[in-house]
Image (cartoon, rainbow, N blue to C red):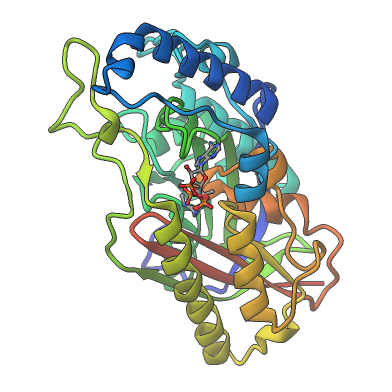
Length: 380
Ligand code: COA
């Protein structure tokens, strides 16, 4: 399709897809492995600790994790090495250039499900955006590999806005539709967050899980019945060092294998909590006003899944009352924080019961800071 012949369009979400890794780690399993690592570390450094030259590491606790975050378990692609106190990181065989790469594989699985649910032939998709917090390699783009694996004739590219990658991807796709440059765009978010998590850091070792989601954004003229009209989208970024990862091609891990803890995810969790809640609530309320939507009448909020307490506060400010689980569903308990995929998992698992005319909000927030809001209404 050429952009010269297409009319401007009206974007909708035709369908979503979800890939969940088979393996899952409970808080009990995670803490047992972490505490074993702590005991071994402290025993190995007993002399320095006794001499006051080194602080002993502290143990983690199941109760703390659940109370502070709401997370009870998380899926991972490679459970055994993550739980091995000597490794505490995902490990897998490096794949050859002629094999489908790890991220593409789970992205394709989620994408296929979204295509099936929409009744869409991959040949009719125009573009693929791979929107995620980390890319397996700089190039060729993950999106182009996913495009090729699905048999899509068009274009693809990668984009990274950390936890807001998926919503930024949805607005980008919606803008292609609005401008008439595409009629069908796949936004794929393979989030292998186990790779950037420091499993040896007590403050954050419990946070993340692996998953992949896909959102098929299309022009209303070709969308299946029961799709979701996109009423409006809003993006916001404000620079902050409170969630940061310094890994990059200019500062590779040393040949000895140690990149340093700052080459993994680090955050000031308390500050993130305090600063992001008001920023996101304000963005939602002002964008709702611009769209003529009464936020208190939103039928459901599919919020970013990072912390149950943050979601409780944001939902309260938007809805004007304490949200029920039906109004603001959580997937944090079983998935943990899956970065940009979290709000899409919540939408995927908790939207089939809504009726035509029901209005809801998909909303993400996280590193950058970044925040994205997608207001949707179920069509007949
Ligand atoms: N087990 C037991 N205790 C722990 C612990 C663990 N794993 N980790 C920290 N603690 C202790 C701390 O040492 C501290 O003890 P102290 O009061 O004696 O000093 C206490 O628990 C509170 O620690 P703190 O880090 O302030 O916890 P918190 O209540 O802020 O919760 C988060 C931590 C990460 C769950 C929370 O800050 C959060 O979710 N923030 C938002 C994060 C977010 O959304 N990030 C986006 C990522 S994409």
